[in-house]
Length: 136
Image (cartoon, rainbow, N blue to C red; front, side, top):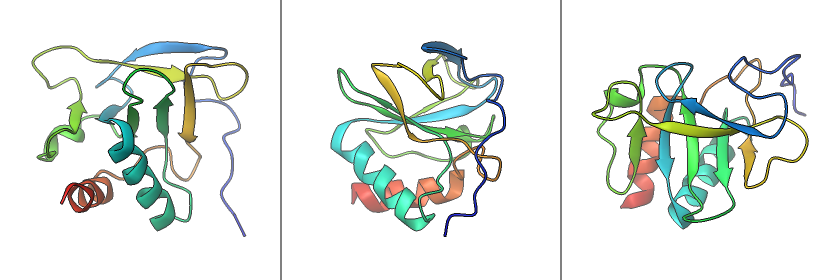
């Protein structure tokens, strides 16, 4: 039985409709993982957390990246293996992440896993461990 509560209202960084770019490092940090590896890590994370992984954004076009949203100022604490990339306010350049609305048409972005009251972010330490296991 799923006892997790959906959000009563969207976090301030989630747009009301469509999708919008948000600056990584302000409301969240992000870890970007492309293609099959991203889907594999997302599945492992969701299975480990009983499908309550925290926010994961999926792109439907291009490299089909997945963005795992972490608490602000946490992504740089880990050495992410290639081809994984940490996006935060601590980097050499600014990074933006497309964030879809919780409802309605948001193509080419959607939620692989949504934020909830109990899981507003992906757990960085767990994600790092699963990424390292997946790239071996």
